Amino acid sequence: MKTFAAIDVGSYELSMKIFEISKQNGLREIDSIKHRLDLGTDTYATGKAGYGKINELCRILREYKDIMSGYRVDDYKAYGTSAIREMENTMIILDQIEQRTGIKIEVLSNSEQRFLDYKSVASKGRVFNKIIEKETAILDIGGGSIQISLFVKDSLVTTQNLRLGILRLQDNISHLNLKPSQYENIIDEFISSQLAVFKKLYLKDRKIENIIVVDDYISAVVEHNTARFSDECIAASDMDMFMKKVREKSVIEAARILDMPEENIPLIYISSVLLNRVIKVMDAKLIWVPGVALCDGIAYEYGEKNKIIRADHDFEQDIVDSALNISKRYMGSKRRSETLEKIALTIYDSMKDVHGLGKRDRLLLRLATILHDCGKYISLVNLGECSYNIIMSTEMIGLSHIEREIVANTVKYNHMDFDYYEVIGQNAHLDKAAYIRIAKLTAILKIANGLDRSHKQKFKDIRTSLQDEALVITIDTPVDITLEKGLFGRRADFFEEVYSVKPVIRQRKGDLF
Image (cartoon, rainbow, N blue to C red; front, side):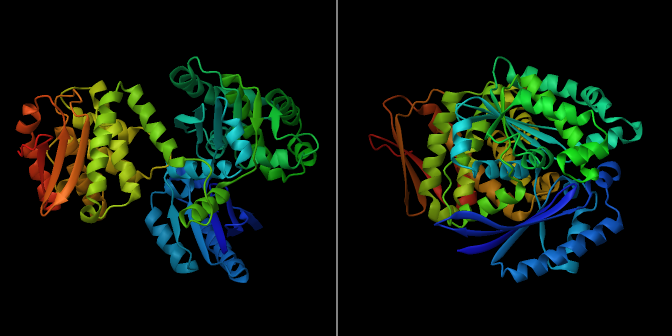
């Protein structure tokens, strides 16, 4: 059993949960601490947080550290989200916090943050798996943005980020001196155009039946009104009617009805209007508010990575499904991708003792094979650059920014001559470790691409083996592979440069080329 602390340095709240994690009982929350701290308003308006707020943040973190000591915490993870991520001086602030508190904060990319939120929902197990059997959306409401992820038949088909977070919206309307009854129409003017575009691009004929809400304020409303919202799933119309009545009240009256602090009420108003508009766009009938937060996802991932708990849901497949849908959107060839994937992963698995890469890199290679030709949608000439730009401009939930750079550059240099670190590191701000991973994955993808240069999927079967200083690629095919042999050399040279292993093709009859 492990005692673990998860710390979320959020846009408007600093929270920590203490968990016991064991194989027998899974996650068991033993304490939860929250402190209201609005970092987001300053960051979104000016790009920096005031010194007073940083001092307050450090003070609270020192208290959290004392609490962790009291619980004899074995390990912890502290993550910053959009308020930290969007600061102009992020690295300076993070170093200052670590020096003053001893707590190291890691900054999550948006896709990593939303993936952890998603894992927090999936940690509910049975209910989550039952709900996503039907077409479902996860609405993740944050301070700086919202994330909408769509599931169809248990499969994640798209995830999109919209800069419609509640603190950002509050900042936009704060100077208007609105009454609660005016929130709905004014916020609607801010958000309706983006939701309309989302509906046109991603909903089309889909009928979304359920919405899963991940946030702090709608969740708190449900938690404080268990008599009214006693069922696991709530009729969307009931929630809408209740929140509409709340918005008709003054802040003082609403705080009394909801049994919540007055300072939270404006953000509850905004969250409820956002939810209302998403429900209407999707025509959803049921909503589920599991009452989880980022801290739950942090703990769940820690338990999963350390093999203390076993995930019931295949999260890696969600990332793959997301890439498949991006490829489909840009008219990628599914058949060619499947061929490349089979060849590339066969080579990867046979080179384990040579490349020194891990399971995560295998996933990144797989994503690169799926997205290898997405740039053709824009240009057949500048295929590499266009593919890179599409991948870097399209969010894949669960990937860090660095991982997306690795996939994008692997695809790019599959089609172009490889740039060395002085060029690629400067352009993409990659460290040397990421650069080496790109070089190794690119070398494998180039070989796989060369073996299917005609795009005719000539090979029924392919086997690879390391023999001395050669990678022997045995191909089972009766057809002519003159083109593949003729164009193989240049790609083989780069592979040999990266691995000091020479790849050679051997046809089934035993001819060595």
